[in-house]
Image 1 (tube, rainbow, N blue to C red):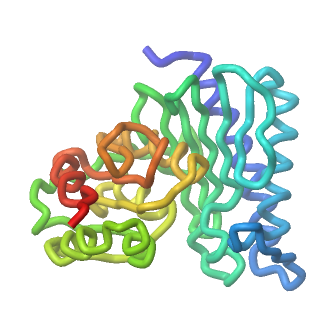
Image 2: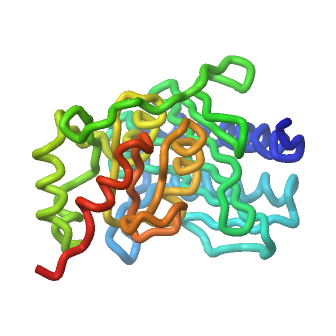
Amino acid sequence: MADQSLLDDLRLAHVLADAADGITMNRFKARDLVITAKPDRTPVTDADTAVEDAIRSMLGRTRPRDAVHGEEREDSGWGPRRWVIDPIDGTANFLRGVPVWATLIGLMVGHEVVAGVVSAPALGRRWWASRGTGAFTGRSLLQASPCKVSAVSSIEDASLSYASIGGWVESGRGQQFVDLMRDCWRTRAYGDFWSYMLLAEGAVDLACEPELALHDMAAVSVVVQEAGGRFTNLDGVAGPHGPGAIATNGVLHDEVVRRLAYSED
């Protein structure tokens, strides 16, 4: 039986996502969109900060005892329950008018992600999951279809999604990644959250990125896992704690981890 309190948290995550969608869609392709650069030179828009501020405000009223970790603001609160927010995953797409971006909302208890919502309003898509109840996609909790990973069992038959090759070269695993690409049946750079949601739906069979932060991974990781897949760091350690991420349908996972292993040679 599903944990009722966890279902309440998942319902709240959908309410948070609804609020985020309203803000992001209002600012998407806006002529007066404000774009600045963070210290790491990555872009941030006024929509990113507005979404995170709105979610933090709503959580402050509804879950005042919970901690919050977000991409754009300092951490707040303390305790075992922590909401992990990426207000716009795919900001570069957002500011260029490409509709592949999403708000990621995850809930962690201790080191485990127990619920997550991924909302991509410009695509008209949303995905969600909670521990032990499966992963779903649809317009709402009442209008949903289950997500299930593929059963592809060989690299030669697998479809791989990634973000960029440059990051793999910088990580020292560039040759391993290129060799993996060559051996896969099909490769496409869908990138960001989209890679992992396609994996959860069984449309691709493996997705990986060498450098990701917790806010990039928390929500997507529970969707992948509840869809029957595996989500680990580059060394095969389960969870969204990095370094990097490897997500697969489960069958391919150990081989992918082995192929991408760091080598001194």
